[in-house]
Image 1: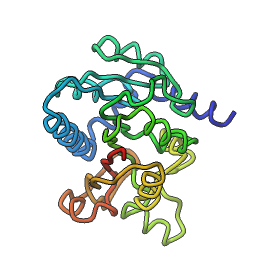
Image 2: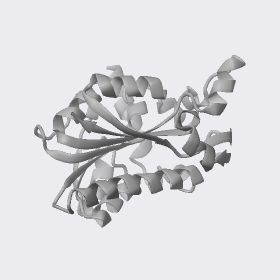
Image 3: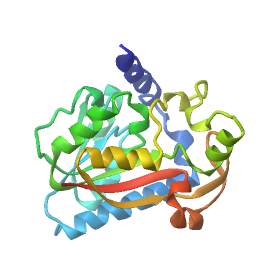
Image 4: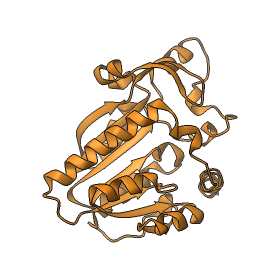
Length: 240
């Protein structure tokens, strides 16, 4: 019952027109997309530009799907919102409406690459997510996860002084949907538990000021040096 309700909340929030506008103009998000493009592009080049299948989990309105199509992938998308799936299908993406927590509608060893951008923090059932991604990935296939870092620098100070982490604010307009926030330690543990090999960890920037909607002040240089203090965790792994 709780899982279904959470899924409904995500669908109702992110299935609307302009649902991602608050995020798209954010400098931190621009850096995130730059890193995604580099990582996924390198995989495509290293595999000899063959016909490769990529799955965008929580594909939203399809902007990242378009990026993957421009690289050369056959792009598949899953989203809980049927409205979003209508949009991505018009872009030439093989989109399906599904609740990730109830399993993925694909066979075993189907995808070369899976991308989950800002998804895992929205799911109650993390275990099903990791199991299902491993199942649909081919052997030696790659998974790229991006997720807000519960232990990014300002949040550490907030907890030190007895304040609630902003990332899990129960009354914020969209952060209330962050029901399973991760630190790097927990994300690494979960990925290794489900038989993934850690390839790289990156972050966008170390943030000094964040107003709950966008980064006001931050350092990309420090994000590169100290990713576990960064705002977003970006981890690439390989199925063993």
